[in-house]
Image (cartoon, rainbow, N blue to C red; front, side, top):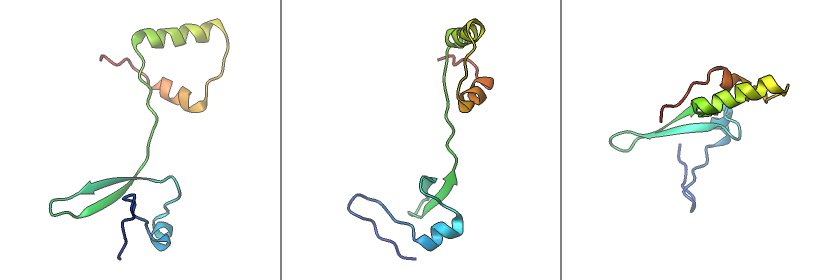
Length: 87
């Protein structure tokens, strides 16, 4: 299949390929270049990450105790797996 690079360096994937692979607008692709120049695209999921110090985690815990509040669902999921970043 022949595709062309436009003046911005973008490559358009044909609609038939996007449909067959289930790619929607906003789909993220990882691009790798193999020795010899072969280009491969892999679909990937992007997850938000939050880095908090121990003090930051403590402040959030204290704030939750002092007054009921609701955080977005994604934040609650991230916070449940939170740890401190030693850097």
